[in-house]
Amino acid sequence: MKKLLATALLSLSLALTGCGFGDTNTETSSNGTDTGEANTSNNEASIVLNMSLPEGPGTKNDAGAKAFKEKLEELTDNEMTVEIHYSNAFGGEREVYEMMGQNTLDLALQSSGPMGVFDERMYVFDLPYLFENSEHARAVLDGEIGQELADIFEEAANVKILSWVENGFVVVGTSKGTVKEISDFDGYKIRVQESAVQIDTWRAVGADPTPMAWPEVFTSLQQGVIDGHDQAIMVLETGKFYDVQDSVTIIDARFVAAPISMSADKFNSFTEEQQQALIEAAEYGREQGRKRIDEMYASSKEFLANEGGLEIYEFTDEQKAEYLELTKGVYEKWTPVIGEDLIEKIRAYEY
Image (cartoon, rainbow, N blue to C red; front, top):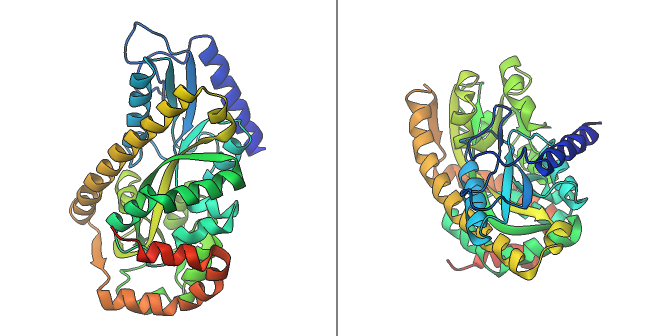
């Protein structure tokens, strides 16, 4: 039913766009949609692509999405534009990937979390402490390994990765006192994405992982259904999670990619020139998106500690090593599935 409603909403949006209602201005409309008009009045865009974002305007990936839109308009002389739909308007992230695979939605900029559902090799992002830092992760994704992963996902899901943006490394936000020791995770009810590797990892350190759709997390923290969640630190500010939690622990165990992705069927329907414009625009969106991620990481950390009133604790190198040691079984279980060659190539990648 949820998917049918999302498809109906998309059909209505496309119908309105065809009637000229989708090309008004670049400001966000009252229903949380960037209306996606071309930047000049000389040309009305003849191709309007619908793009899904999980969060609202001004959040961590909004800058990357808007940069992609603006560059695409520039490169195509406003022949092509993008209408950005916020706050999971078409459904959850797995459903959005499915819709793109079925060619009922054009574009998305969202987490890599559900990608392993389509091909388990994509769970590589959930392995703890595989990436040393952001520079390492970005170099991997911008090179041949990133292209290899993109090819795997396109084959499995019929979704083309245009570029790799990111959510960055996750932190643990909690409403159950500050996590300062690994032992504090014993019995800890933590929300996870729909990822078997995330579930196995948290169980390995003693926690009680609960798969949960993102829109349910805030209320679940408020009601005590869960004790915490791991998420990009920027989300704790923009989502006002400081109202329902009291601390943040920076563990840096899991790096979350967030690709600009597109229906492969839709991409293949365009001319070679249009395809090149889409890729070039996505690469620009990636660079602007990463720049904004870096800016927001620092400002959100400061905001949460001051205005947000949260205690912020950072794991030491020794604690990270202890966490990794406890999760050795996760690597033993998932290395044959994901591929030892892929894991070792990422570990050894020079940046």
